[in-house]
Amino acid sequence: MSGFDTSWVPEFERQVGCRMQSNVPMSRCTTFGVGGPAQMLVWIDNESELSQVWQYASSRRIARRVIGKGSNVLVSDRGLSGITVKLTGNLSTIRPLDVSAGYLDVEVGCGCSLGKLLAWARTQGLGGLEGLVGIPGTVGGAIKCSAGTKIGCIGDHLLEARMLSRKRIGWHKATKLGLGYRRSTIGSLSVVVSARFRLVRKTSTEVAESYENARKARGNQPRGVRSAGCFFKNPKKRSAGALIEASGCKGIRLGDAMVSLQHANYIVNAGKAKAQDILRLAHKVMYCVRHQSGIHLEREVELWGWTRGG
Ligand code: EPU
Image (cartoon, rainbow, N blue to C red; front, side):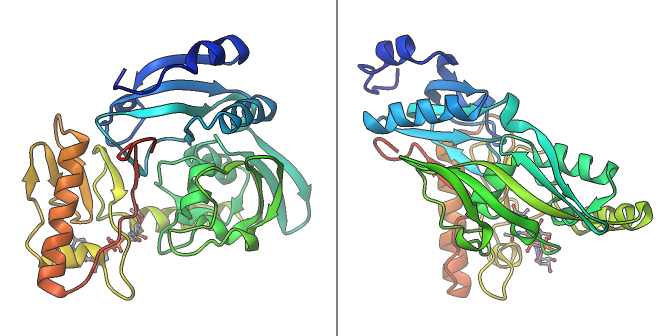
């Protein structure tokens, strides 16, 4: 198993009652379709199971992480040591809370996909989250990465998030999460468990219109490809896509990793790419952009499992 320490596994299997499987290829759990095996994948159904696993792992210093839709991560070919958690069941529900004439507060489990949340909001005549149309992740992942588009981002209508850290679980106001352009101050060992949003009541025509506008805004982006969306953040007042195109990198390949011909800030797995091909291609793009424009591109995609214990 990729040379990872396995001494903790038998005791973990005995003591923790959740569904689990060892050696699961992360290529099945990420939108890039690449990545070596997770040493132990654990399906978690509720908050108490999550606390139990998290505390178990943190007290024994076992590496741990939560994966949502795997839409913003590049997992190494070597794979992931320790525990990788997938949220299911109660951690994916949508629960209406306070209602008033103009808005509805809603509590959402962080394993809920953005697609499911948006479809629900649309049928309820609720607006506010249209900026997230077409983003493939889960609510938890979207909060941690502060996902969004030019129309809006996850933080715009977020009231508070319930977070599990090493020792405690509790609600944190959205203003305390350090949400900015594709960043938050939520640490890698904290998990967003659920979130409360305040959504705005709209007429069905208004909702349909705002969803259509959001869909159009993504019109120039590749669909149905294996990618992690935009690979790089936009530098201040510039577009990473335009900079990459100007540097001559549009369409270049390394193995089966390719810079999309449709949108240069998408790196796609055009066949049987390895994670290593994708990362090397990203480095090449960074080099060319810096050479051509002097601008340093910063990754939006997270790297998992590229360092020992990482
Ligand atoms: N452009 C090029 N060449 C390209 C791609 C884009 O010249 O290959 C130019 C476009 O013509 C346009 C400008 O760059 O003038 C901006 O492009 P676009 O409208 O596609 O927006 P973007 O800045 O590349 C951002 C987000 C997307 C989000 C869209 C729409 C980032 C890094 N990307 O893209 O988010 O969907 O706006 O709101 O902020 C993501 O983060 O994964 C993502 C897909």
